[in-house]
Image (tube, rainbow, N blue to C red; front, side, top):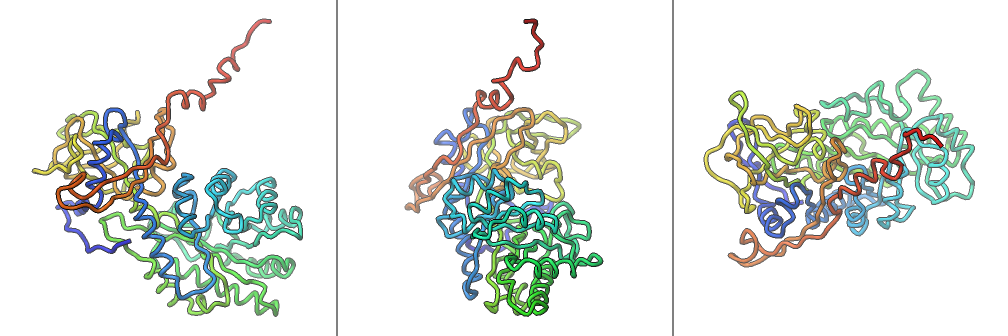
Length: 462
């Protein structure tokens, strides 16, 4: 992704949005993708996704044998996954549903990694039959694999460990705390010996996996967890006297800067931190697997939503929009941990200007806390205006919450063709959209809510 300088900040410390997507918002309104008929939608910058993948690949270019996988949970939309596969990515999945999506998107089974703390026997059996790599989350799961594994399987098999290096600033996003539910706790009494024993008993167990966390986790913490995993691999191979561990899955977890348009930290920063913490990691002795998600897509997507009403309450201006907890769930439930930049546009999709006013940007859900931004200083919003929630390309519109049976929003990919000054939307060229997921119909909502079994609970006299 193109690096930018830090943007100037408002008085409240938040950065005004850059103009990167202005032409896209205008085109979406002009083409009817945002408006009365489409009050909320998600948008993905396909060129931006390719650039972000390119930046990741460039950062690891000097290291042979790296498989970069995309964490499907970050954007579980088949066309987006297909785009990432076309960019040369593999896919990390954590459920039977995500595995199905990855296969439908065209990822070869050999480039899919299955992670989950609660894999069923059937899930493991299918992965082994397909040749999907599996990272066992516990010693108990290893014993289950013992019973299910066919010696002829081509699946790469590993064990996830929890390096217990501590948590970041967002507790729920920290997966390497002392009591994390993930992996085998490396520093617990007897755990290290048990891990070494597990590898000794299973010559087919050839990978170690660790994932420290993502948002709120500084690079130093992430690097420390990877370093402990590397040291454990070295110890196991030395103890066994053979290089049994041949690959390390170092997870993902690069945090995203939500304060402004700047990409920081970069993938190059990440590689530098790992090099400092574990110099031997990039020696080529181990094949590496990464599992990035949010950092690849967050800044390459946004949500656009129509302002339905505005009102004043207790001296506070409130803009009621169609983007709330159903599509910005984390921000609504944890606003301090997941703040979003907001853009204000007129009914024509052109950025609004003029004096700013502190306004709450609220959503359509029927509970009082459905607010995506409090007291945000923006040009005064009015009915039929459009608000944009930036940096929402991952974990937002792709996996909406079905609260109030609100329809899932449509999602569109877009490309911007450079044009001459004065041509095209926003005088910036032509914007082309492609449907990634259509808007959910009311018929679909009814079907998912059990319409086919409408009388199932009614007692009838025969």
